[in-house]
Length: 315
Image (cartoon, rainbow, N blue to C red; front, side):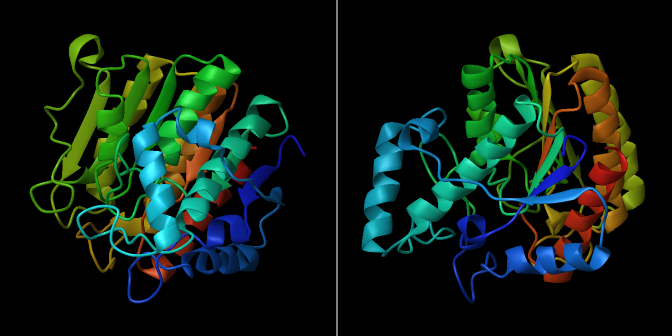
């Protein structure tokens, strides 16, 4: 199984969502897995995750925030932020399952069971250390970065994000951390939530220059993406990370209902293939893909299947 791509599936991640008419519905999991099954790719191993513990959540999140999510999830009323992320009953457990599944993928990679993994319902990159935001309750990206350091002794983790929205929860969570390498291609914040990610945001203090933000104008297509992506590849090659975390939100594809970029699924496949090469060069192949956003179901199914196809081709 070492050369198989571990693709995560099951109720433990499928139930993360907020129901109709919220854009982040629980049907996103099956939309992807149905397309993946039709693709009939070789070298895929369907795997299941687990629930993260409170101590694991606390690697990134504050205890007060974890406790607040637990209490509001039990009550099932109100919002965890200013109105995007409902505190529905059970969301604490569902969000903990997302984090735990990504941690399971990291463990299996670090233990040599596989080199690549993909978790479709993950990449919840807006959640801050002390708060929810933008449909994101717990930031699995931030937790797994800290987990790889604490539990597996890694130091230099690279986070790469091609979701239409800036990965602000990760960026500001590690803004002053020189060993968290950050590269993010996104729609310009002057036109889209969360309004951050200007090219001038490169990190603070000792971390200045370790963060790469590339905002694109509304309507940017694969041509603009490829020009930006060349900068990401050069940046990662120079950084020489030990592990790659890839947030591959599909809301950057043309036709998403809440964003304004115009990529095709080919952009996601090409980025994934390039990251496999970089992972093999610098990281002993270690790479996790996390689905992130995407609110046109056909788009997310095609984009994430393209990512998995590239992972499998490079195994």
